[in-house]
Image (cartoon, rainbow, N blue to C red):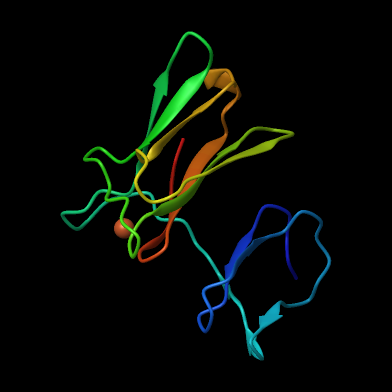
Amino acid sequence: MTNVRELYKCNVCGNVVEIAHPGAPALVCCGKPMEKLEARGEDTGKEKHVPVIEETGAGIVVKVGSVEHPMEEKHSIRFIEVLTKHQVLRAELVPGQKPEAEFPVKRQDVLEVREYCNLHGLWKNN
Ligand SMILES: [Fe+2]
């Protein structure tokens, strides 16, 4: 059964969806079950994906990652999300821009931040 805020990916076409309201027993895309994305919280390779959270005067800025992640056409951060108790804030990124986004939320209200790399999947921090 799906749950709110879960992300699912189609490994055939690359489609990624987020559950806004739960209830489906399973998700199917391109005729196959979609894979539930599990966020990783620790970098292992030389590329850094774990999002870094910094406080600003107006809220927070989330950067990917501790070493700036590539933002190329074939490999880039596609979105960054901030989860609070009652909100999901999503910044949509495009190749060429910096892999970071600002959010007007108080640091103490942040339950989790996560980001999605088209090649390396979902990563989180809090
Ligand atoms: Fe990546």
